[in-house]
Length: 486
Image (cartoon, rainbow, N blue to C red; front, side, top):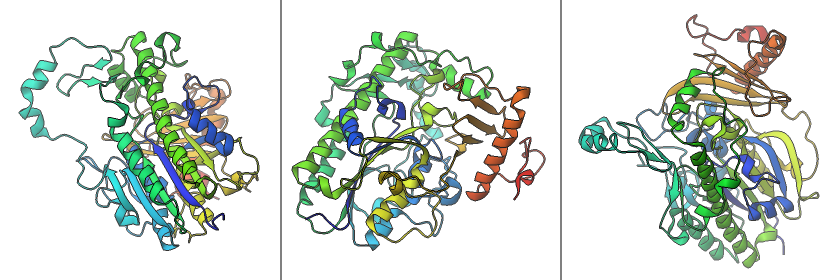
């Protein structure tokens, strides 16, 4: 008999760009494709910040960083805040309150002072939790002086980035570890073992499985490392962007990756795609467990990532300060058997990670969060168009491990990025979908600039943003918030 309330399965990858999951993309994700054929694929899903901690905190709380209080990596000495703001709730607490059993396997990275168990989860295994330190002390550089000195004198290896005095970085490569020996596989196996134990449970449950892949470095085992032939991979269409019409910090980041030859860039993309396919195979094992245990029809499944990966776009890798779509847009697929009257449909409206919390709570019949900036996606699952849905996305960047202030507004036609300390960006996405040409200074775009400022200030007000300081040396926006009141 079908349960009155669904079980919930969440599978979250780390640093997976939406592009690899789109129909027709050469990266193969057959298990995610199958889920999309049975459910709904959201093609315009974004985090409010392309960085692990703030993005995951927004996913858990349904709030912007300015509301939940996590602005950057909270597990090193440059953390702006280490804990969620007082009074902030997570969807897991509400699910537990309504009678759900919750199980957590994998990456946390939400708070440096709490673990999943503090928010209602039973912990299977947890990484990036309390006690984790993701940084390096100044004394370490002195202690390892000879090591860094030696590294600075070696020739660069294939796929390696030389970083004198910082430690060289291998961006991609092949590991001798077997698939079953990987940490991510252990995380997935813990989740599957819990699903097996829940096979006959009469109470609703929520299982979270959070892998670390395909986060850099792209070092993966065979057969995935050679699954895609670099010769068949074109360079990203915006790879040759010289970034001269963009903020200087972008060029400074690209300088690190310009060491790579074009052949190495193709090899890196081949490894990234292989990594994404490997994560998809792990996801497939989870789906197989659901079916094997007869749980599929009772389970709402969510597949998503916390943020994207540039993977050579604009000559960049990883994520963070730059607000290009490759680093921001993420895959999001939701399937709820029996509640998708139009399985296989795509939704092109703008959705955000903050929408997941209210979606799960509504599906579960659980109490709502006391405060939430997201909206339930259930109408889309039932093939109806919600009234007054958002027509733009808003992102808040307060820096990563380097403090920096920028804000992004994206509509279907334009992307506007406000930089407090550098030139702004405006892209006409109808003619420039790859964000190559910054038209912020073109005279015929000045009305658009003002309109996008208006949207930015409206989002800023609604999200309780912190960028309203009017002091003359920091209020660098050409159009201030006072022009856009009701």
